Length: 142
Length: 142
DNA sequence: GTTCCTGCAAAATTTTTGCATCAGT
DNA sequence: ACTGATGCAAAAATTTTGCAGGAAC
Image (cartoon, rainbow over all chains, first blue to last red; front, side, top):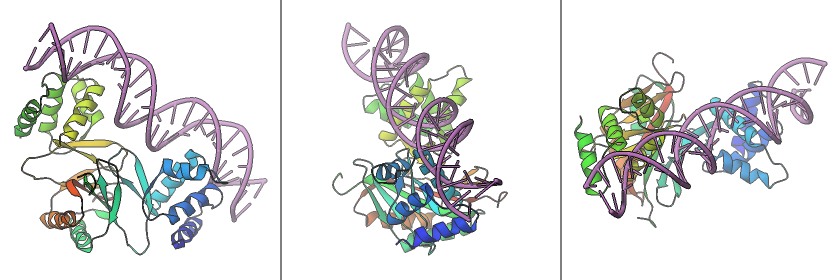
């Protein structure tokens, strides 16, 4: 699970970036997650540890990781961006959002991935990432 | 094409909302579009007409229409929300975004819709809308 | 006439940037 | 040492809200 964090730090080093302090802390935290976190959530979780990180640094780390394709930026409709690790295996999930209570669930679906892949091939774009968000009411709210 | 604008105004009236001034102007503009607009784009396009609308009213109209399910709010990854009419026919498209030049293209794909529908049925959520965004480099930028 | 709608301005939220200082190589 | 990274604070960008006046029904 922390394989992503190590691989990510290594990838940054290989590209000439340094790797200490805030950057490593944020990467480690992201690597422990299995779903997406917002910049504010990252800041808040680190605030009360012995290694707090400035909010500006959080944003800068996320921007760097996103531009290097190491994390994916995801917007779930609430107006705030969330970020999650990109697995080198290509494995990834999508999101179900309850517009009533805000709950977020992840799901995977191979058939959906195949359909997306076919669209991407015919698109004329070099598609680097995709994003699927389903909005509705969750089991408790429906 | 303006069928949507008329139907939307009628739907609001039926729910007890009034329908004059800014609200109708924004609805008419949305009805003329075939893809999504941001609040700022709507404000800017109306600013130089003989019927400008305050930015706060633009947001309020969009919020109302979104909550009534008459427009869909879409986030394409730039941090700003975009809005587009929801066709009663159920017909809709998804978006390809060039992360390099910002170009947005729409696409439709029945096989993708079927795959999404199957996921939605097995999700445990009452899915009201879905959103697919493909990110990459367009033909000119790749 | 009553109630909702609108616009302006102010506020709140999220994200970015300037700059001096600090840390990694 | 050199250069990039960090934190703080200020700024920018986007969205929301308060309130007084105006319009729809």
